[in-house]
Image (tube, rainbow, N blue to C red; front, side, top):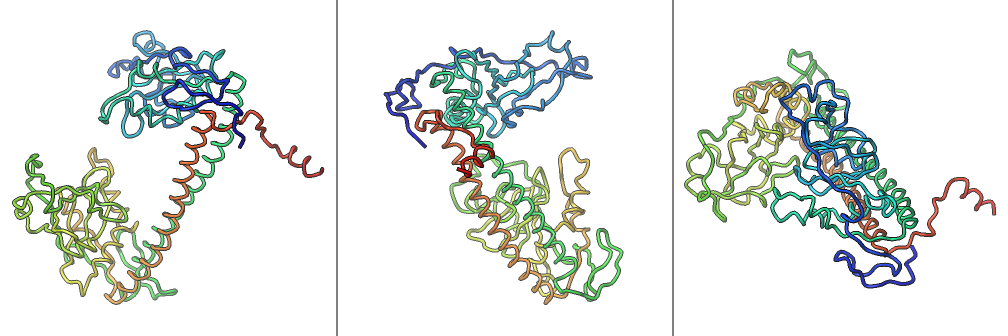
Amino acid sequence: MDKYNNYKNSKLEWIDKMPFHWKSSKLKWLSDIYAGGTPNTNNADYWEKGTIPWLNSGTVNQKRIKTPSNYITELAVLNSSTKWVPKGSLVMALAGQGKTKGIVAILEINATCNQSMAAIIPKLKEINNEFLFFWLDSNYQRIRGLAGSELRDGLNLEIIGDLPCPLPPLKEQIQIAKYLKHRTDLIDIIIKQKNELIDLLKEKQLVLISEAVTKGIESKPKMKHVSAEGLKKIPKDWTIKPLKRLISLKGRLGWKGLKAQEYVESGYGFLSTPDIKRDTIDFNTINFITEARYLESPEIMLELGDVLLVKDGSTLGIVNIIRELPIPATVNSSIGVLRVFDKKILNPNYLFWLIKSDYIQSTISKLRAGQGVPHLFQKDIKNFSIVLPPIEVQNRIIEFIENKNQVFNDLITKLSEEIKKLKEYHQSILLEVTTGKIDVRNWQLKTKKALNGRGNK
């Protein structure tokens, strides 16, 4: 792409140089900025049969907001501090969970919003709303950092008003916005397609695992009918056994939580649910506890081959296996430790893949259904019935799954890396164009008609 002919030193702290003919300003001089409010949630007259779109801070994740988080009544607008925000305006999350704080979105509907959002209504004779959206979006990390280092710290209207803004001529802003809309839409479509492909691969991966652990890997095995939940037939030489006859299941009992002084810098690992990933156990993120705490529960001192099952919270059902143990370690009360009695009868790796399969995960989903706080009771886990092939068949199934699984994981990793690079490119193109490092004034969208005409010449 072209560059501008002449640049000057910028007065904006986020831009070192800008095109000579550009100006600079602050957001408060270019827009009206205000926050909304939340009608009393205990007053049904404010919410029931509401027709007015209302936004909470999470809606900014849509980027282009078409769907409100809720609807409120006209009475709610009259009796609360919420305010109308016109279509085409911008909204920015002042606070919110995770990465929400600092995200900017553009409204494609008229709506009202809560107090955790800044409504930004551009003065369109001075600044184009799409250009402003792309400028603020490109500086998400910088804006987020203005709130302070603590995750709980929020932005405020004063901070938002003082945000610096480059100010190209209005016609040029519109051209920049058209270019960026076209380019970022293309990038987003490619990212969406790659994410859909990842989802498809994960689905096929799960089907392969489930088929292997319930039907085996022979092309035409001899089958027999069984009366087991989720299964109608299994290979003829397989059996069905209650899990409690094959494993011990232990968990931490009686803990009311750790005191600060019981955490130490190194020594005995203390695995919690965030450390139990779907594909790995992350020993790099774990906390450490005192020797006294570690020794008080010898039954859950981890050993190679232990299968770990998350039995509480939002990640309930995630399972992994101890294939390496770099340090002595134990688990918190949300993790169950399944230890095989006789590895000549049940291979722990087969148990891991079995619990990971949809065959067992569907049973877990039924047990958690309707619970306010998801929880798996140890007695329920022990009462699982599992399909049990002969040990030599288990070993062949394990080898088959792990080989195929590696192929799937390699493809998923490759796609994930491509998505990461696309997102980085998305961000870099925003910054380069909105700061004037690239000149797009002569850019034109090449239609099929234009391309055909050029080809005929």
